[in-house]
Length: 148
Image (cartoon, rainbow, N blue to C red; front, side):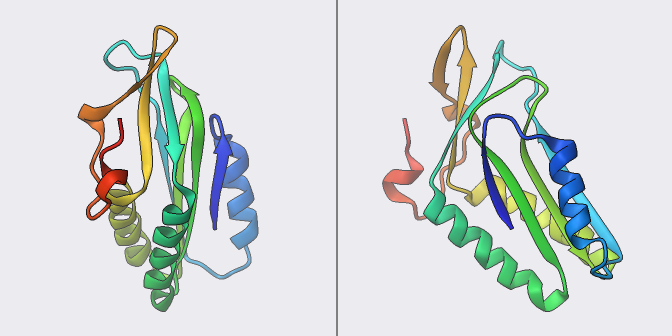
C-alpha cells in the first residue's frame, strides 16, 4: 500500500489505520518508521515533488521482493510543504517473523533514500530552494536525477 498525501502526514491516524487493516492477519511483527522534518540550517520546513509513476514501480518491486518472505510493506509520503517537527514519510513492515521485519524496514528505508523519485526543497524565508547538498541522484535517472 502506497499513499501520497498533500502536506504533513497524520501519523497517529495512518499508523492506527494500517494496524487495524492487518490486526487479524496473524503477523508477529509490525515495525513502523516515521520520518520527521528536523530543524537544521535555519529552514522552516521542507517541500517535496514526487514523480508518481517511478515511485509506484519502485514500491511495487519492493512488495514483490518481500512477498515470498510473508511480509507486507506500507508507505506514506508527503507532496508539497511539511513544516518543522511534522512527518513527511512513514514506512511499515508487517511480517510473521521479527527478524524479517527488522531487516526489511532497514533495507527499505535505505533504498528509499537512495532510489525514490522524490525531490526535496528547503522552505526558508518564504522561498522554496532545491536542497541539492542533501539530495541523492537517482541511479540511471538521467535528467530526473539532476533536478534544479
